[in-house]
Each structure stands twice: as structure tokens, then as C-alpha cells.
Amino acid sequence: MEFKGKKVIAIGERDGVQGPAIAEVVRSAGAEVLIEQTQCFV
Amino acid sequence: MTSSSQSNGQGAPVIKGVAYCLAHVPDLVRLGSKPSRDIPIDPSVLDLIHRHQRAFDDAVAYPPHQVFIGNLRPDDLKDTPKPWYENPTKGAARTGPYGEIMPQAEFYGWMKVSDQFDLMWLEECFLEEARTAMSSHALVTSEDLDNLGKATPIAEIEKAISEEEALPLYMDKTRLVGCLRRGHEEDKSLVPDFLIENLCAKASAVLALRHLLGTVTETPAENIDYLLGCGEEAIGDRYNRGGGNLAKAVGEMSGCLNATGSDVKAFCCAPNHAIIVGGALIKSGVFENVAVVGGGSFAKLGMKYRGHVTNEMPVLEDVLASIAVLMGPDDGQNPHVRLDMIGKHDISSGASNQAITQAVVVDPLNQHGLKITDIDRFATELHNPEITEPQGSGNTPRTNYRMLGGMAVMANEIDASGLEQFVEDHGMLGFSPTQGHIASAVPFLGHARDMIMSGEISRAMFYAKGSLFLGRMTQLADGISFMLEGNHDS
Image (cartoon, rainbow over all chains, first blue to last red; front, side, top):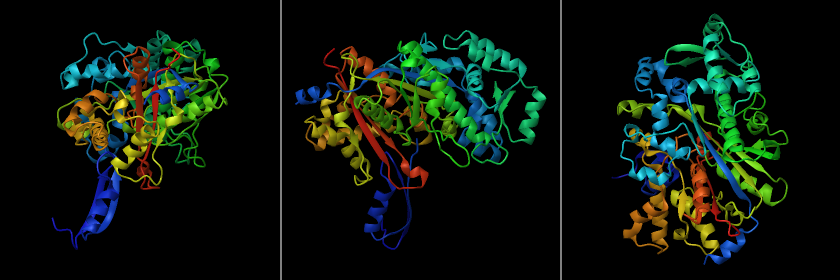
């Protein structure tokens, strides 16, 4: 998937991949992160 | 490798007993946070929840509940066919070595007894039913029965609901039996929605503490010096929202006349923090006998009801879970809480699950010359997967055990092909209600204590996580661990 120039909402999960980690990855791929958040789904 | 860690444990505080209770409250599910937001939008949701309501006998015979109160070990679930809600435990009992599963009518009575401010009104017929049900309970006193007080005419209850925003209390889905009123005309911290949370937490914690001191151990309540609350409620008025110290209110109703207390707030890992703080108070000589108490989380009732009704399952989040832990100085018998090897997630530790596991589990072990595989059993987020998976929330314990196994692979302690065996040998199936703090490692504490004392295992590590980011004050999570180890004087 091409992330360059894309806008991303990064919603992570505490016991999986957390929001800041997702945001960091897509930023490094050239995306703009609009919202980064971690949720607890249990 | 292990000798140094054994010697360091001498003189450490011990776990003298652990109590666990469940209050089965299917008619409070509609008032839980998620259902109470959904029902006004779509009133048919209430009917959906009613059609999937679970009976008390089914809640008692539910195998994970039998594990919770100690009639089964967690590993017994491996031999129990799924779905567990269709494979009840034969001969299941309401009581177990760690506590009990209480039916709703009785629990309403315990809530009423716990209410010192006339917040809860019950109508006459039901009040007598509750009184009758409570009167045969071994832990109920004549003072409790007196404190049930007088009934309120049903017309006044209906008026309070329609004109004063009181919350209705039902039995059998539609039978109105009472209400929970606001505590102040203007105070948004004393609205019925918060007060019912707090009253549920208090009443369920009292049940657990009374079991701890009355059935699980024979420790006189007067001997307790300090109480540490670890629940998820926020007690207080408009000037002190979250002011706390529910612990002392719980102690007051449990005969702990010589105790004071305070609450530890740390989201789901508060019980672990409280056990460590309690152990430190004992080790330092400040207090001798400390009880950690945590009531149930009312808001989480029915949180994942959608997943359950969609899959034609009973709504399984219909119980309030509570715990009480008795800690004391080294007695040469009970298992030690190793205060010298606490694992903690520092602010600088990093946010990933791997970073948390490294900081909370691997680092403290390595610092004491121990490997991950030296720990017989790890207790992590012990959420019952049968509750979480239908909603798409995954199998939380399994995810965490696989992460831990992965760390063992990276440390060359096990081969990658041995990952599943590691999970099998050092983990366990999730059996806890999804009550947040009471799913986070501490449900295994009673089992671990007994398994260590019987020689079945030597060590168990409890690592819990807290979702601090949910409060919108930080993006951080939290995590903290302690190790329970056999008392080598015993």
C-alpha cells in the first residue's frame, strides 16, 4: 500500500499494536497522521 | 541461578489469603455504560438483552465462574468443551474456597445495607424477599438486617424515577422493585449513574472482605491495620470527584474497627500496585496486617453485549467481580511477595507491547539471574476469551502469552517451534469476568498461593497493564509486576 501523501487515522490496541507505533510507521512511509489513539477493547 | 533469588525472599511480606466473589446482576446490565447509551437510541436493544439474559443457576454453573471462586483450577478449563456456557460444571456450587456467587435479590439487599444516605429505595414485597434471602447468609449480621430499613411505597419509587431522574431497579426483567436516587440536587458528581457505580463497588467489596476475614482466613477483622482500595470507581462530590477512600467505607462494614485506609488508582493494574504498596508498608514496619480490596465495575456490565446477542449467546457480562487480599509479615509459611524484584513500566520504557513486557517481566527476572522459563506460571490479562472474542476483541491472555513466549525465543531460552508449548506450560486460559482491574493478573493469586503451598509450583509472576490513555491525560500505558514465591522456611 502506498502511504505517501495519504491522511491516516491510527487506532491501535493496548495488547496488540499501539496507536503511536502505527503512526510512526505510516509517518515514515510519508503519510500525514491526523489522529493517533490507543484503545483498550476488553 | 535460583539460590540467590530464594535467599532474597526471606523476610518478605506474605499473602495469607485471597477472596473472590461474583454478584450476578442481570437486571443491572441495561444500566451498564454501553447498554444505557444504546437503549435510548434503539429501544429494541432492551428486548434483545432480555432475550439473552442468563439465569442464576447458569451463572453459577458457568465453568469460568467456578474457577473464579476456586472450585476448579484454571487448567480444568482445558478439559471443558466449548462453548463453556453450553457446558455447565456438573454439581456446581454457589460457594467455593475463595468466596461465592451471589444472586441478584440478595445483592440488592447488600447494596441497601451499604447505603447510609437513603439513596436506594426498595418496595415492600421485595424488601421482605431480600431480607429473607439475606437472613440465612452466614456473613450477614442482625445489624445488617436492621440496616435494610423500611420499604418505600411503589408510587413514590415511580415518582422518583419519572420526576427526579432516579434509576429504576428491576427483578426478572420487568418487575420494578426499587430505585437509586441522586445525592444532591445540583451536584453532577452525585448523580444516580455515579452513585450506583460506587454503591455496587462498595457492596461487592464488602462481600469479598467479609469472606476474606470470615471464611477464607480466620483473621479477626480487628487485626487489620490498613485497607488499600484498588477498584475502578471514583468516589466524591463536585469538589472532590474521585476523592476516594472507598477502602475505609468497606472496612467500616466489615468490622475492621482498628483500620484506616486509602485507595490506589492505576486503572486495571491498581490491584498489582496496591499489593506492592501493601507489601512495602508491611516490610517497612508501618503496618502489620494489610487488606487490599476491590469492588466490581458496574459500568462494564453488558459492555460487549452486541457481540453476544449477535452470536445468539447469553449476555455474559452480567456479574460484578470483587476481590480481597490479606497480606502480612513473613510467617515462615505463606508465599512471599518478592519486593526486591518488582517489574515496572517506566515513563521512558516505550509504548509497544514488547517494550512493556521487557520492562515489566524480562528486566526484573534478568536482574536476579532468572530466565522467563524459570517462572512456573505467569498471570497476565486473564479476560475470558469467550466474552471478548464474539465482539472481535481477540483472546487477550493468549496474545500476551505469545508475546512473552516470543521474548523467550529472542532470549534463546526456547526454540521458536516451542512457542505453543511455552504458552501451554507457562500460561493459562482466561477465566476472569471482564471487569478491568479484576481480570488483570490478580484473579490467579488465590490459585497461585494454594498451588505454591501444595508444592505444585514454586513461582508465579503477576504482570498487569493499565490503559492510562483512556483518561485523556497521557498517551502512556502502565504496567507493573510482582513475583510470588514459596516460603522456603515452610
